[in-house]
Structure formats: C-alpha cells, structure tokens
Length: 309
Ligand code: C5P
Image (cartoon, rainbow, N blue to C red; front, side, top):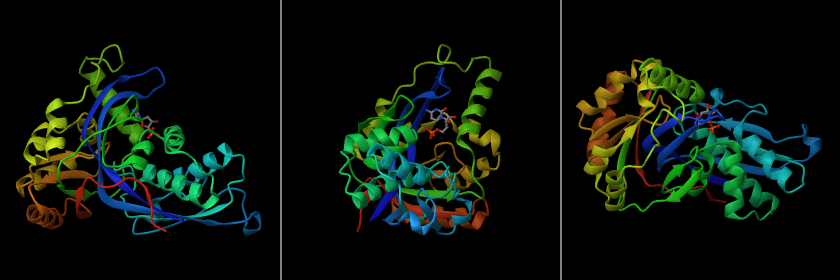
C-alpha cells in the first residue's frame, strides 16, 4: 500500500506567546504544495527481524532521515498498531522528495503517509477523524498532511478549519544546504521577543489571528493579493540563525517573485510567482546565484495524503 503525501507552505504563520506546555499558539494558514513523499507499507513478520516497523528511505536526502525509533513514520505505525491492539509488524519505505528539516513538514507528511498506508494494509478501517486525532498526537502539522488543500490551523496548528481556494498558485522553493531544527527556531523567536522587551509568554504576546485579506486572496485565487498579505512570524528567527537566507530571499524577489518568505521554520525559502513562466525564470535565477542547493517549481493547492496502490 502506497500513500502519496504533499509538502506544505505556511502563507501566514502568526505565532502567539509560549504556552505553559512549551508550544506556541498559532494562526497558521497551510497550503499543500505539489512536492510529495511516497510511503509504502508492506507485510513483515517478526521473523524478518525486529519488533517494530522496518524502515528504508530513498531519494537525494535519504541519508539525513533518521532510521531509528524516532522516525515519525515509524512512530505513526506504532501508534496506529497500539490503538488497534496489534503488533506493528510492517516494512515502511519512504521515497523522499520533500526537503528534510526544511520547514515544509516532510516528517509530518511521512507520518500521515504511514498512518494511511498501514491502515489500508492492516485493514484497520480507522475513520478520517480518528486518523487526524492520531496525527495530532504525533505532531502539530500531521493532521494537515492528511487533509491537504488549504486550511487554517489553530491551537498549536492541529485544530484545522478547511479553507476555500480559487485557482492555482505558482511557487518556487529554494532548498537550502542543511536543515534548521523547528524547536531551535521557536526558541530563537522567543529570544528575539525577550531581547526586544515585549516578552515571549502567552500573556505578553497578542492572540494570533488569521488575516482576512489573506483568506480572501486564497478564496479568489488572487496571487498579487496573496503576496501582499503573506507573513511568517518565524522568519526573523530563521534568518537570525541562518543570515544567508536574506540573500536567497533577495535573489527571488529581484527575479520577479510577487513575494518571498521563509517556509515555516525554514530554511527553505518560498517564492510566489505570477505564472508558470515567471516561476521558471525565478528558479533559474536562484540556481545560477549559488544561494541555494536546488530550486523546485510547483503549484498549489495539492491534495492531502492519498492511497495510490
Ligand atoms: O508538533 P511538532 O512536533 O511538529 O513540534 C516540534 C517543536 O516545534 C515542538 O517541540 C516545539 O518546540 C515547537 N512548536 C511550538 N509551537 C507550535 C508547534 C511547534 O513551539 N505550535
């Protein structure tokens, strides 16, 4: 059983104060984009070795993916098995195309793919609601990888409201060398807020709210209006930890991007383009500049996790 799962970009990431549980309240507008991982679940028995899922990964970034019990796809398979009172005997193969530790929720996509593929393989018939609830236990971005399209994520990002989109948006993603740790970027965001004297806790940071202009732009498919409304509160923290991202962002803007922003916690940079021709020009400029490892052209919205076999 193979599940195909999309990456995401956050067209708005409004970060509230640090909560007592260490997470941050968010108004997080997710958009699924056409870069995908594929997660294949196939039968395994204890005689094949090991108790838990047996994991393999292919793709250009495969060596950066942890193969131990910390892998989110393996944890997803274990959680689903436990919920249904069965052993997590399964082989999982991840064909990885989403940048690793790039701010595009690649690990969350793999968890969503593992939930869907294992549920089909084991015939455990988990309802979509229950799959999303299991996803939320694994990570804040996992429920969105199941749903895809566009959605507003509140709470720590896991409480989803689907959003309407009108038309296709054209994107370029500049993939960086090396990842950034999401917790480290949130910590840097807190540090910058404390250094600015505003405080970082939930009682000192205003409640994050979605931008109505941005939601309208998504609904009408207006790329210029979306560009004007996009914002990422984690961008300053990602740039603080990786100052070279400033050059990447400038390169895409100079090549005609309607807007440039860091994707989630970075370091992937996202560029919204007027059309597919402009996207190709931006991608070529980024590749020529040497300010990124690769530039990927794609469109949004993309569907959520889907079984393909
Ligand atoms: O939920 P997830 O495992 O993806 O979160 C990874 C880390 O990112 C958390 O441990 C936390 O440090 C940070 N985070 C946060 N607030 C959120 C989501 C994530 O502080 N809303």
